[in-house]
Every structure is written in C-alpha cells, then in structure tokens.
Amino acid sequence: MFILDENRPKYQQIYEQIKLGIEQKHWQADDALPSIRALAEDLQVSRNTTLQAYEQLVAEGYIRAVAKRGYFVEPMEPIFMHSETQTIPQKPNVCPPMIDFRLGAVDQQHFPLTKWRQLTQAVLKEPIGYQYGEMLGEQVLREAIVQYVFQARGVKTTASQIVIGSSTQQLLMHLTILLRDEFTSLIVEEPGYSGVKTIFQLQNYQLETIPVTAQGTDIEALFQCKSKICYITPSHQYPYGTALNVAERWRCIQWAHERQGYVIEDDYDGEYRYGQKAFPALASLDPQRVVYMSTFSKAFLPAVRVAYMILPTHLATCYQEKFALLENNASHIHQLALAQFITTGEWERHIKRMRKVYKSKMEALVQALTKAFGDTITIIGKQAGIYIMIAVHLSMDEATLLDRALQMGVKVYPSSDLYITHDELTPHILMGFANVTDEQMFMGVAQLKKAWLHEVKENRV
Image (cartoon, rainbow, N blue to C red; front, side, top):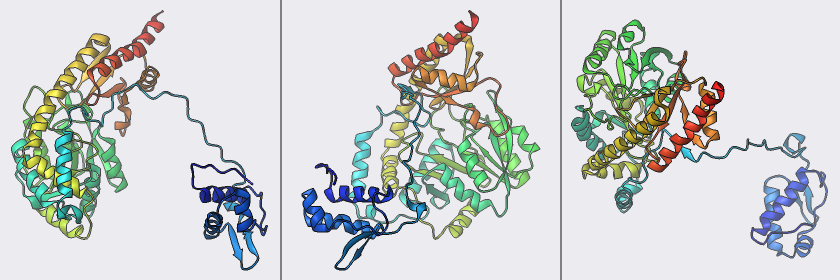
C-alpha cells in the first residue's frame, strides 16, 4: 500500500497516509478499509501498530468502526476536505544579513553568564521557586528597586508603590486601564516609541503629539494640548537621544500640576550616559504627579522579561484594589534572581562595566561613520544609549537606503514608523551597536559606504 520510514513511528505514518487518501478522495464515503490483520500483514507491522493508527482516525472522525464488519470511511463535508494541494507562497530569495545593527540587543560577550546561572540555580533549590509569586511582584525585588532608584535616579518611594511586570508595554496596558475612567486622551512624543502608542490606541485613548527634533523635545507644546497625561522619555528620548535639562523637567512638573494630571516617565535606558552625569528623574522632583517606568531588558538582558513602574501613592492603592485578583506575569524565578543580583552589588558592577563597553563601541561606530561618510550624514544621539540615529543627506529615500544596505548584507532600521502624523523629509536611519563586534561594525560601515555612496557616484556620471 505504501512505504514506511524506519526513522519515524509507523502508526503515525499509517495514520497520515490514510488520512491523506481520504482527504484526496482516494477513498470515498462508506468505503471499507483493509482489516487490521490484512493491513498489518501487507505492511509487515504488528496489529497493535495498525490498530493505533485506526483508533486515531476514528477519534478524529475520518473513519468509523462497525462491530464484526470492520472500518469504513465517514462521510465528510466538502468544507473540511482539501480539494486541491495548498500552494505555499515562495519567499523572495534574500540572504540573511551578515551584519545586523539591531536595536533591541545587548552585548553578549560581556554578559555575566556564570553569575546569572548561579543565581537562577540557587533560586530553583529553594521552596519559594516552586510557588506562585506576589501580585505586585516579589517583595525582595521591589525592596531592592527602592534602594537602587534612590541611589541612581534620586527617586524616593516604597515597595508598596512598585509594580513588577513582564514589560513596559504590559505595565502600560494596566496603567491605561487604571486611568481610563478619568482620562480619555494623552500626549506622546513625535516621533516616539511606536510600541507604547499602540497600547494607548488599543485602549481607545485619543493621542496628541509634541514635536521632537535633534535639539530636543518641545516642552512648551505641552501647554497647547488639551490632554492631562503625557508620556515622555526625558533621560534619553527615543529615537533622537536627547535629554531634558533641569529647567525643562520642572516645566513638565508645572504642567502636570496645572492640569491635575500625570507625566508617565519612561526611563528605559537611563543607566547609559557617556560624558555627563544623568539628570535627576522627573519622579524625584514630584513623585505624586509622575509615574516612573523602567525595564531590565535594555541594561541587562531582553530575554529576562522584567520591568517595573512606580506609582504615586493614591494610584498604587487604586491599582491594588483593581488588579487584586490578577496573577503577576513576570518570571517568578527571574525576579528572585534579579533581587540577589542587585543586593549583592552585581548590578552596579555590571552597569559600570557595560557603560565602558558601550561608550567604546559608540565612539568606534561614530568614528567609522564619520570617516566613511563625512558630511553626507549627521550623527544624532551619541551622548547616551546603545544605538544612534543618522540623518542621511543623499538623493535616496528611507526605503531605498534600507534595501541597498540589505543587498550588501547589512541590516539597519527605519525611523518613519515612529511618526503618527508625518515624518522627516530627510531620511533618518537607526543603528544599534550593542551586540556587534568591532570587526562586524567596521565591515558593516564599509558595506554601507558601498551601498549608499556608490549610488551617488553612479548618479553623478
């Protein structure tokens, strides 16, 4: 009847072949199938093997068993039959990029793998690692965060005001639900992180925008908006990489007081500043008008899905009442391991070490790009973070720049999707450098030069 592969379960192959024959109408409704004994002898398998395949077909409704008569094909509705072979669309023959300047990656070479493995294994040896966690997140991690944000960002808070989540987006989803009864619109940066805009739109918030340029965020535009909530990245604006000065931060606080609203401060990678000390967090200026948010994904490891937000006292109380019956969805084991990582001083050592590593990579990338492109590009955001943005002053649009780079084996990223109402006339390209080696970096820049400047020379001929 058919040939069986010795490397796969035989009953599974028999089941698949008969099922395919029924779907392709080689067997019609009410046709009799070979008996268990006959089919077993024909295929030289045991009767149990054949019986197992038939029982699976009966369970799924392809055939029926009739006492003392055998097995018969069940009538099937045409909608469930594959009338023709499904054609799988062919993907374009594009080679994967050799060098990926990915934004959401961190340095793999310097990750404290041995220490992290020790801490996670230690958690698994304790009874607490085999229980459900606390609704707000693990108490030991929240207490560790209390100490850290005060020392690093000047924020005074308590463990009861901190909520642990799996990501900034997940925490924002809860926050917008919490605020929805009182607020129906909010303000976002333009351009800005598209991931949070999606969350706000899913919650049916109307969005207003304030403009951002390479010179910074237009804080005065807040006072022209009607909304009473503002989402902002004051320590390292995404994607321009600018930071609000102290005067601008106080203006944000003033706006929140005048509107009786809130500033949502996303401090997603405030740890990495190069050449100047970080400004105090907005939440340190007025913790009752600022919701402070941060994540361990950028500074530590994206795969460790742990983020946190610090709520004003009255919102923290409301949060605990509204979400009292929900389970915390951040990894229980990772939370406990992170608490140990912070309290033993490993976190501070890791940040200091990675700040040096990323500063060196940033300088190397800026130097390589400047040497390759000169005044045909402008480099933006080289004071902080683990990516840069470049304005490309060539006769190509963003899509062409990305496509030509990919043809040369280099993947860089667009900024146009970070706008709601409009985008820049000059294309702006994003390049992450955290998880590329120096060799990959220099090769990538050389390939980009061939991809982009070769086009210019061709146009001038």
